[in-house]
Amino acid sequence: MLKDHDIQISMDGKGCYYDNIFVERLWRTVKYEHLYTKEFSSLKEVRKSLNTWFSWYNQERFHQSLDNMTPDETYYQKHAIPQAA
Image (cartoon, rainbow, N blue to C red; front, side, top):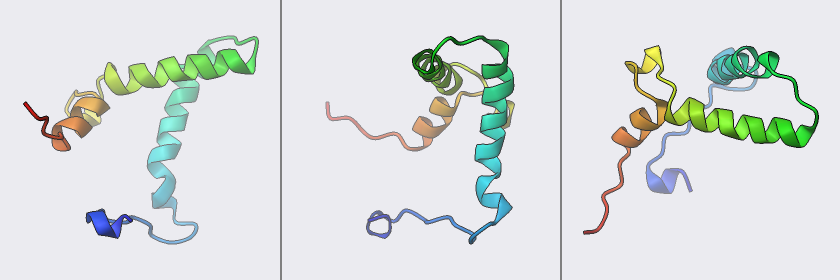
């Protein structure tokens, strides 16, 4: 399916550290900026809080590595889908 849509598959092989480096950095940020700064009384509360946090992270938090844009601005600017008039 990916090849049918000209999407490059990016996997360097089993156990390659580079495959996980971005996800590991994201989870470090989640833990230190959000989870470790709050108290939760239930798993449901954690899930709700994480949903809110990820929305903020992607839509409102500026990222220095993205030229101070949000991930949504960066991604959707490059992959904008033309809308019918």
